[in-house]
Length: 301
Image (cartoon, rainbow, N blue to C red):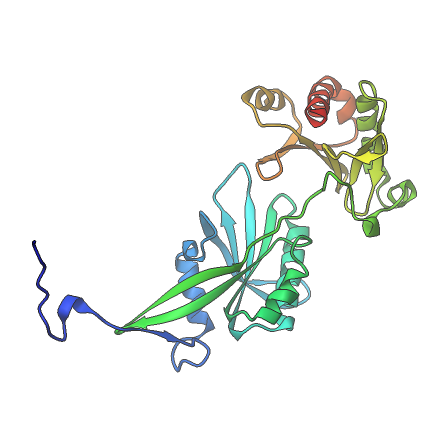
């Protein structure tokens, strides 16, 4: 039997005992040091391939967002609004995190957004508070630990709350957010007219489809039941018409042959997302009919 002999002594295998330290109570380390480390290497957060877009980002109405990260997926661009907190989390900080996320998503609607809170200690009670938002807000909570090994420091991040992604549920909008047609006639009549044109195409091959209205979007019902394979959202002087279809080179080519403003394909929701303005439904009626008919067929399978 072959054995390995390890010499005794202070420097055997360069062993050093690791020590977990508090960044908040450390005489030298601070929140800026933590922010610098993440800015240098956003990958340490475990959010996939993300790069630093901005830091200390000034917010309308006051405040600064600690870090704004963005993924490298050009087909499904996504941003992460990251807030840092040393020590134990508190309710006011999560409110700030959500406020910054909400402001960013409203200003930059071409991206998907996720709120991320990073803290040294995330308590069970605080997880319960955050959990109330999960499903309504894309939110993640990461617990950071600073570790000292000899004269060196390192960081570990543990995801204690994973994201629950919200979306246009096929079961329909929450009753609290439901509105009637008059709501959209007052708030965005131009978008409503586009929705009516889209419905006209849909009804040409399925008369049971109708529009359903809520505050965030206009969806569809089939025989009185929600079936949101097409979701229409308001945009300035236009509408974002999200059509649930698997991505294919054939469909990509069809859009390339048009002048439609097409947002990147949403791999998260499986949607093509053209911006439709006044006159576009009539101009590109054949293309839209092909896509809508295929989406309808897939939704019925």
